[in-house]
Image (cartoon, rainbow, N blue to C red):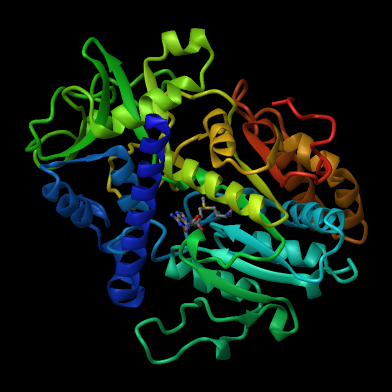
Length: 481
Ligand SMILES: C[S@@+](CC[C@H](N)C(=O)[O-])C[C@H]1O[C@@H](n2cnc3c(N)ncnc32)[C@H](O)[C@@H]1O
């Protein structure tokens, strides 16, 4: 019980930190400083000043979770806050950006769930972390032929980035006259309703966090590559017990020995080499706390408790996201109060992954500490741990899967959809469709033998209110992944 209370406190603290981020985002609107940051950042990175200020308030160092949160979503130079980061010209490409078939099939899955709920006249669709809005645009196109579905939809998008909200607004065909003009928030869609598809489509509203989305209707959640962007704490077992990995700014914290990265990388997952190369001067470096921190005392026992005995004994590195845990628990609470479903697609696996935090810039892995705010930071989703959030929510909710993305898309008919779209397409279009298909369902990354492709690296996980039938694609493959 004490561990559960500590988890809840950690999740509350993560939510409070996000609220603060959001509040300050509106006080310091993006247009003023943000636009310049991509090129104007010095070697400290666009979020360097915000990180250094936060570290100095905390004795010189930050948890990896605070570092990640500020580097990604600080209003002062946070990676997501001021620009489009997706696609060839950006840093990484997600499944909805690879092929329209992805969002269309996600839409079909939700339409099937709506029908399974008895086709209620109003259903809330809540997408967390919608990126460019491509998934939701394809979701709407892919379901336009289903009688009554669009007129039942009430769409809510949870997005912290003002710049990405603007892209989502335009991807969904919302009309600019719905936006406030001449204020600090000009051009940034918010909680006020606008209609998608040029004014003829379902109503859409934006929120900074899930807490702001109203309850009281049947509800369907969708999260694609959202949980992997939420902050993680990292811990390492030492002779003194479990210590926390901290990001030290200028070595003023007196907080201990170089961490796993500074020891030359490796970790259970390999590949963290180079992280210590930034040490020296005021450049941040990874260190280990002396002894346990409050986060280590709250989170390590809870995470270990989810593991089988052998894995618990041998665990040396742990990565825990109380923020992701909090989101899943909140979603389950909502599914306990109103009928509904959630579809979560992300990379990860059922067991813990050691330390998986990575930075990606220009489609390449880079040092996590290099110019924070200029690279995406992402950690594998720990489905085994999140399963515990379902139980801890106390809600009557069933969990399905995870299954591989390949299984999910094939069960929903991606082969038939490819064939249908290919008919009547030009050779170039057909080739693009086929390349997209292969990337989405492949078991091996192209040109990199032994590295899992998106078809198996990504998993689909579903949650349903008790009493709903097995969702499509989860019927026969509950424990495939
Ligand atoms: C990796 S992107 C995925 C985008 C999209 N789902 C896709 O697959 O293309 C993560 C998304 O989550 C948003 N995001 C990250 N942290 C967030 C937070 N704490 N609250 C709300 N949105 C957040 C980002 O701005 C971005 O839209």
